[in-house]
Amino acid sequence: MRRGALQAGEKVQFTDRRSNKITDQLVLGGVTQTSHGIILHDDVIGRSEGSVVVTVSAKREAQVNQIHPERDANKPWKGTRAIGGWEFAVMRPRLADYVLSMPRGAQIMYPKDIAQVIQLGDIRSGMNVLESGAGSGAMSINLLDAVGEKGRLTTIEMRPEFARVAEANATVYFGERPSWWDLRAGDFDSVAAGLPEHSFDRIMLDMLDPWNRLEQAYRVIAPGGVLVAYITTTTQLSRMAEALRDAGCWTEPDIQETLERDWKAQGLAVRPDHQMIGHTGFLMVSRAMAPGFPALRKRDRATKDTVTDIDSMTDEERAEQLEDLQLRDISDRKLRKVLRDLDAQVEAIGK
Image (cartoon, rainbow, N blue to C red):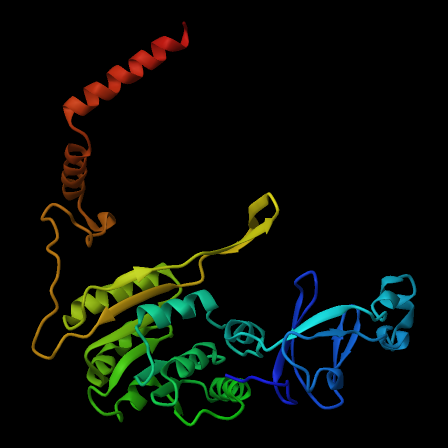
């Protein structure tokens, strides 16, 4: 964690009184464009976090379209953008702020999901973690931060260009390339085949078909290790859950999603925000059994068929199943009570 005066090369976050945020990297002689003038980086470098900087007036001609100036002729607000005097508080960005503002190639995981991965996956300092799917590096940076320099993160990314994006984002965040990070380009099975058996405490999978990677995942994870899979669709969710059960060496998967909603609180005006972050993905968590010990499974009720598709049944089989469902649906005694209550309510309408 960095402290002290802000230095050139660091990322900082500028926040105005309306809670508008701009994240930028400080550069000697550099500037940050805002809708109320520009922030001179030389006015920020050397200051402490929590300082307030004021924008300076930008040249009006810089705000006008140089190729087609006539397009800005009837837009007086273009000139007002050049006016300075707007205050911004300066802070080092939180990790969540950095992740949301960093350059990205692939879609990133949201902080709400990343936090759940760290907590539910029980990922702690000193652990040896395997990650598949670096993307733009959002999850990788958080895993590197969680395991710390005493731990180790091995990341497998299929696309070399995504690996470069993730590596650059992590390098900018930490100020140097993390020495405890082993970033490899290639497909999961090929790279994992060269890793030692039962050497990883935790595995994080963020890919389209995690159910096809369970064999190698089980080979490299230690008994009792935690597997976390980030899955976006219900069809993927179903396939992954059944694959874990069919493998017989993973505990019953725990599945959940997290929804996020901000609130406004100003005096007595306390209400939820009009917008919220709804579904982004599912998290599936399972643990590895020791070799030779099959996972314990809950016995399904004999009358409960959750596998057979009703469209694949014959007419006779479909009729039998529907009859069973009707018999289990409601008892005659309960039905008589419901009808008595409804008859009384209907009769009361005309009174």
